Length: 160
Image (cartoon, rainbow, N blue to C red; front, side, top):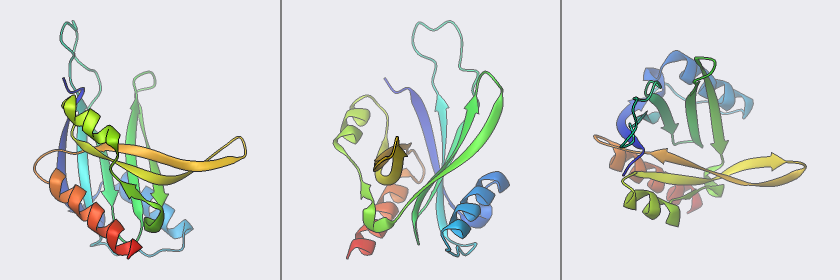
């Protein structure tokens, strides 16, 4: 059984909520990139489902996770802390040439009813060691398949 329900819709950078758009633009500016307002983005709202046998519903509101493609791969996540009742936005970014789309874990997630895609290639540094991090983005109707196809095509084009 799926843990989350996802709804994915096509958007542009200009139509993202201000805190998310600002965080993406700040990250792009730090990388000396210019993102036009019409750069494609896909916005996924994820909502935690109540598990069978649970006596209470989830107190968390839907969590938006926009992702943009050209000229970089990024995933901006707005998270929520149940303890502080606060939201925050984090932007993960990677060079498209370093990104891999999909993994064997996506098939496992799909078997459990969670549709989405794993994006690998985000630079991670811990205790002086560098590595590549992964991020699973849940995808759903109406534009989840289109989002996955657009990201896949953009990464393939960057590597060509």
